[in-house]
Every structure is written in C-alpha cells, then in structure tokens.
Length: 199
Image 1 (cartoon, rainbow, N blue to C red):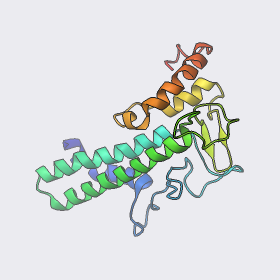
Image 2 (cartoon, one colour; image 1 turned 180 degrees about the horizontal axis):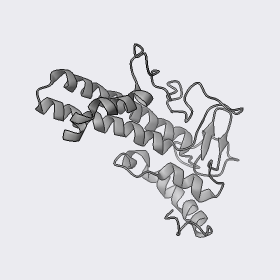
Image 3 (cartoon, rainbow, N blue to C red; image 1 turned 135 degrees about the vertical axis):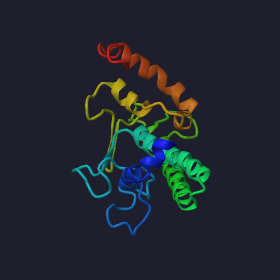
C-alpha cells in the first residue's frame, strides 16, 4: 500500500489511458479500447481500423488489464480508508467498480467470440466449417485462426490462455478447456519450439 499511495496519481494516468470513465477528462478518451455494443475491446481502440476492420488478438490480455484496474482499486480503497482519506477512498472505489464492469463484459465477450464450442449450449456462433476451438484474431469482418506472430495452432490456443491470473478460473470455462486441450496438446506435440519456449 505504501508504494500505491506514493504513486497513486501516476498509476491513475495509466488507468485513464485504457479505462477512463469520464467524458470531462481533457487528456484521455473515455474507454479508449472498449466496444460497448459487442462488449469486447479492440487492440487499436475504437478509431483505428485495418481493411478487415478493428481487431483483437488476445482476449485474455484485455481481461488481465481490466482485472488489474479492479485489483488496484480494491487495494487502494483499503489503503486510503485505513488513512481516513475519504476523497481518495472514493476515487479508488470508483476505479474498482470500473475495473469490475470492464472485466465482466470482457469475460462474457471472450466466452462468446474467442472460445469456440463444437457442442453444447454455447455452440453455433460460428459456421460448422470453422473447426478450431479458439479464434486467434477476431476482426470486424472475419475470425482468424492465427496470431500476429505466427500461424502454428498452439500459438492461437496459447494466446487465449495466457496470462494466467486469478480471473483465469472464470475466463476459462472447464467444459471449454476440456474440449480445447486435446487439440492444443496435439498441436504443441508437433511443434519443435513448444517445449523450448515454455508453451
């Protein structure tokens, strides 16, 4: 908490860059990356688009970013409350709630758009021709089974599973993981770099 108190305003600059809730902020746009209609974030933000539209590779990274916003708000609300600083406690609680909202909507979107099911009640968002159990890069116009840094199947699977943080238990539904694991393990078995690079 001491570090958080000392650098509170500095960390708020980082948070405001990706999770700013205030339309009155002259320096940062509101929710720079967030698409409130679809519920997910876009890597380049709302304004930047390629010929296939906006894109997002790692849903797990945006989830982790928003989880961090919430956790920072939680820790700092307690720290400022312990110091009887009501104004900063209120700010920290708002940070926590914004982070929770962004995390929740991102979790729901990842489950809907990136975690592909071939069977069960969540199956059917993609046509049956789409066989992979993840989307590596989701675009406005297409779903791609690869990453920006390679097309090996284990890369597309791995980018949706990392980083592992406390929210991963909510992000990675056990039924989806059970469906995903055989394909992920098989693709890693045939990749020469999988063990060497810790994938």
